[in-house]
Length: 100
Image (cartoon, rainbow, N blue to C red; front, side):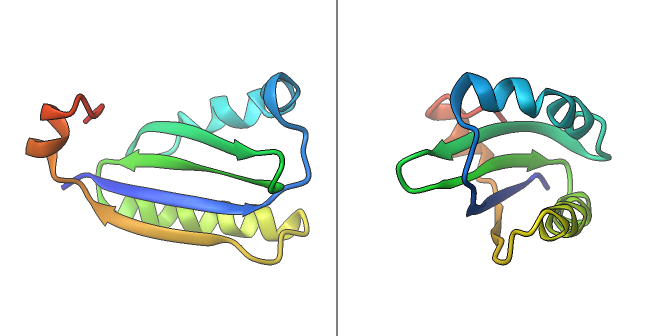
């Protein structure tokens, strides 16, 4: 069953197109993660937060990525990473045009 992973953390920038340029290589590497399906990047410059919503093929793939990503962020000095895993109700998501 597909698993949705929601992650957010304090982030001081860059945001917008500067963020896209700075993190392009990271974005490409995420597409190569085992079980990865897609990611929506999130940012809130006024609140100094960033993160993403990910869809993985399995809970194991989502959990493995979360552990890797959390370690990477902590290595960059991010002290608190918020994360939640969700099951996806594909029937309802299809009705509302969810990319599942």
